[in-house]
Image (cartoon, rainbow over all chains, first blue to last red; front, side, top):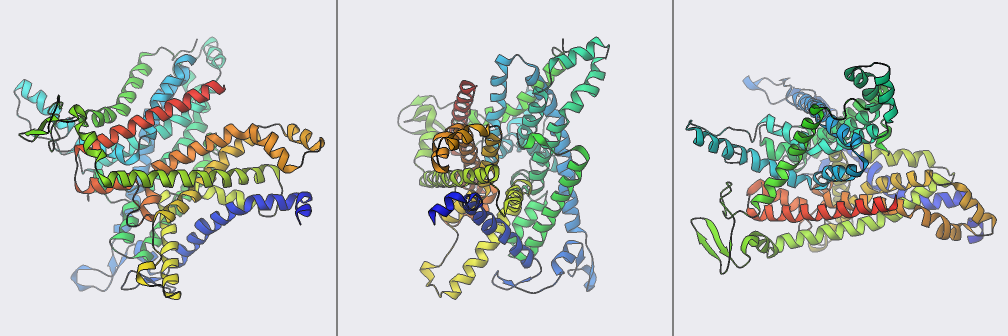
Length: 306
Length: 293
């Protein structure tokens, strides 16, 4: 038996992959299939699931509602479509703002003297590895009614003897956007930096020698070569923003409901796992479709693996 | 000469982004030394050491001096329990996922076998789907499995299967395996196969070749993978959120639960400790890496 194994390369490979397959099938593929099955079911009274085959949950997501004003038996209520649309937009805004913030920083680090690069990168990694929840908390301290910004503004107003009433910043959509941009910024800086660092200085020199203006050099040399990093960064930012519920929960209060909040709520408060399953599958399909078309258009983010 | 190198615009933008990155962190640290128990304003430092003394809502004197909230924190059994859970989960799942992930990387990089493409694709799934979906699907599976087993085996109420530390550990292992595999695979890809072939030619079997040649050469990759897995585990919120049960909250879960109810300076002290640990860990990792280069 052992001797046969020693000579059979294919059996050795299979033996090495089996534990991974057990986990991937048992904790990933079977749960996904189960969620798929459940999404066609109905919830029962004690939070369990009745296995049926109905498209009710998906129809409900599309806006068909049985809970209507004026006693009508059915009507159109785009509540859930709006939640998905809002999450998509937030993902888009966060990604764009993160690219705008990350680019100059990544560029500066990539062009800095090699002796300084490690230190500058270190300064990016520390906020990145500081816990996600803690970083949301810090924005709560900054933005709330008696938070850091309002205290500073109040202090200035006091110095200038102007009346001041605290601004409402926490529990607004703006707070959620700031929180998201902050949380995911390092995930944009890192891949863009990796791309920019690879650019040989001689390319810039050649462009300058041939009379290209700085703007032209940027558009024709820097930007195209930074593309793989931006594609990878976009995936690293966009996908998690779509599914995160902590930021909207803590910084948006009940004002901002995203897909993540919808799903969380169905499983924990509303006790309707079937509808929550349908919503998660739609979210998954949406992110896969967006990522697929995006990478098809701009090339696969090779920096993702590096 | 690169035309952007000294552009004042780039320098200004860089400084502003660094300010954006660090302002929240400075605020967290500053407030962990705040004298006020409730006020969100910075009312000053607790300056004096001595028996606990409270005046007008401000702690003006404490046995721990300026570190009053840190001492307070270390007395909280909830925090200590959450910290213990975090470490148990991180160490166990890192160990298991590193071993399994390294095996998978070897298989995918050095062997041909039947489920090769299937394995490679399934390893990409956790990386491209939103974490919340992975958390939900695992929760669905466990809850269906538990409700089925609990009735089928007719388990008594006190020994019914339920979510706990072990479900958190299983979930962590499965989302960490792909990351470890990816890192080790990258290392194996860059490795010249001829060393292994030479060892085999000289009569070493697969195991000896692995132990004496392959493993020492991929060790930096394995360590990097383990480190990544460990940090992902300690930092994870979403998957833990859906798989933890009563008494098995990790630190991020504990902090989140607290934030929904109340905000206290102890939380700032906890954040400061966390940031300090991250600071040391990142520093050490970078030093190790630069020495290897």
